[in-house]
Length: 359
Image (cartoon, rainbow, N blue to C red; front, side):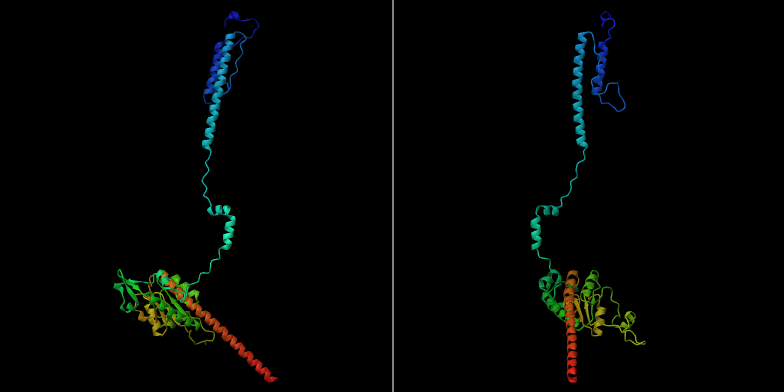
């Protein structure tokens, strides 16, 4: 502006240079990212700087208005870009939900509650698992347990030849018909001994057969030896077992404790317990044993030709013999109850006859 255009008493208007500098400062703040705690000028970013209005000069006023409009449009556009950028960053920083495994059973219950309730009512309860007996045992069960597999022909004992069906790839195959027949005979002997109240001893000392021996003995209230057989347990029982035998109530002070000998020995691995079999034979104690093709079956009272290396097969034979012992125990209980009833009936008859005689 020129000096001649100034009027006395009128306020001094802002010059074109000053107005341009103010607008440039506002645009610079709008197009740069502000930092916290630092500002280049007193103009807030994203806002249009206040400009002193000119009182004179129409050209200067038009130029100022045009520049103010352009600055406002640029600021609005920059604000929209920043909002879009912030929204994108917010979406990217949002934590993603982890995949949760689906509970199939819960899902089915939610989808088919009526069907499941109806089906549960129709399904019968599981029947109690019972061990096979000598009457229900079949050859197919013996075959599934692997009792037909013998030893190689190099370990073949000639005395076991009547029980061998044939040879397959150098392995002796045991005739399971003989196995089933001899097992049923052994069950008959076990049942008879248990019925008379005899002591039955299970012996199984091979690795992996400990629990089979213990379970079979405990199921029929018998005795068991699951560790190494101590030589002299039967032949020298007074020295080996005597100190551990409780004294009888009617024993006199000078009497030694009398150890009890078993009435029947069931040997699950006779190859490692030949000493026990000899001791039982010396004292005429009957023995039942699983005789493989490498064992002489004549040393046992009641041999059962079968594979003594298969744990499943040994467990099957032990369970069948245990069931026979349980049947014998049940018959013994019934016989004892019958004797008791007979004694009570005989006593009642004597009392009646005595009362009738007095009257």
